[in-house]
Image (cartoon, rainbow, N blue to C red; front, side, top):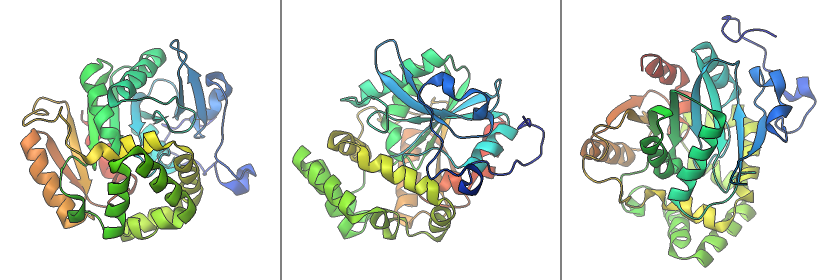
Length: 315
């Protein structure tokens, strides 16, 4: 098996023409992947001592520094194969986790429960000196996990959504109406989720992700998009509602709360001006260092992966 650190680029082994598979590789339990995880993104499920389950994907050979990746609600999938390879070449092993309520991972009731389940999994796997990436709606649980776990050495808050601005200042009217309906009640969340399923992936991955760079990413990663949409549609309304609420005020994030937090907050150059303005102001209030990456908005980390890995090399 070729060493990912050798410098040679591997051909993409997940190409349907090579594998003959219509869907992403899967494995039922942690031992099923074997050495294939060095070149394939294989979803596996671990049952913890508490009886709860976590679905995850680990890419790269043994001995790489863990780069634990928590997805946001709109795109519950692993980082693209190319990013996983680049990370391995930079010394990082991607560990993508399907957050509670997504995929085969057990459901939880609260943000604190989510952080607890993620911590239990990280402890069970024995990851050390890990870098934690939290995208979008993963931020509330991710920050709590990072603050409580000695196994997390550094964190990246990507498009963290802590601006606390009114919906109408950040989203188109039709998006804002759906979000309001979701936050209003559990019944509203059920109706919004059912409507989203009926509208199909073009509704979400079309006008909502209108930035050109994001659209380019979606067009060139169609299998990943299909996998993410399938996972998104399978979640329950309670999980949907808890994730949509991530942009509401967080009692943990008082002024200066992240002054001594070992991490950075990042956003893409292509983000809408209101997002940029709110991000800069709120990050300054919280005391966290910020970085503007050169490409992307929703998919800023995927589009700016070279710059992301350069940032992480020195921590």
